Length: 446
Image (cartoon, rainbow, N blue to C red; front, top):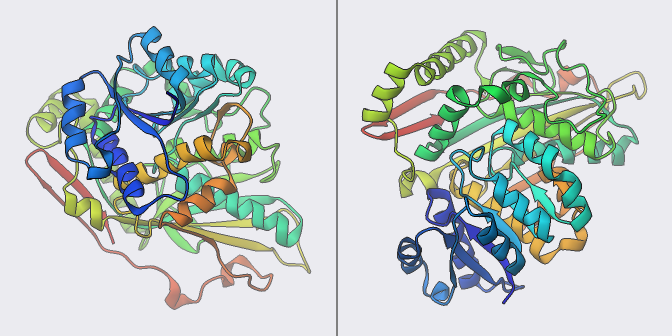
């Protein structure tokens, strides 16, 4: 039997949400029914997860597989069009055998990692083989980094359509978000801080994920890749470093390179999280730095893991999952002047009915990415290690809109100076508030 999608790591927090989403799609009556299976090490746990799904999922097959056993993975890859992999936390020490199995057997691969060093290693080891077998390997298919990657794709595409040029600069701003935090995400971060130092250069280099021969760009010197609070002239607001920006900016730059620099050969790309002003930006940056330091040092890390942070497999409440949201706004400036002024294009990616960005909406984005490969393979890139934008492009935009998210290019405005894009009263204001309890942590910006 051949499956459209095999969900690997189905007993993990986000893996369970992906299974739930697939079951709900079937319950609503898909235009194209999807054949799928749940895979993991423990059949008893898989059976328990399946028992919690809608009745329509009662016939879904369960596959026993250990991610450390390459032969078992290869057998699964032979039976699937796509392996949707949630067996991470971190992916760096678990997922490369899964990528190898897929690349060797012409099976597509999708995951939700935000680990840039892992994605870089995956490309170095398996891009050539994946191209040979026409296996499409897609990393970063969750909140890391679909919203910013796809928004940049939409802006660059519209700039070409409207003005026949690439972009000299693209800036993304997370305008608002309410997101829960799971143990898996935290433990992936701890792994990168404490045990993945050999791949630290992939984090430090703004172009650490570019393919061989990439042109690189000017981002080091113009505020496109800084961790400090700054004024975003295209979005006309103050921004601070986003927790997602490190993998996301590298993903966008890899997209541009893989697409032959369609976005612009001298493109400067950057992103941040909107804040009311420089003071709140510096306070937020300081607080974020203290959190990172606390996780990097053993005594404080131990105390946080013991009494505050969720354990692996734990995550936000159902209420948080349903009520979560995000909006990313991305603005591009054209490479050339038109009538003495700079043309600009803006696009937005919103969660819509997708829910919590880090988990419920991430499951949605990952499943729809996998379904692009399973059901619309000819509309995707031929093969190789790609990004969501370079591998799926408009096909993914359309599927996410159909799934209840909101992705759109803002209506055309007159060509103008970027500082007149907003009226003063249009600037977003926010309040930050957080809550935490025993073994739970939630961040909210609204």
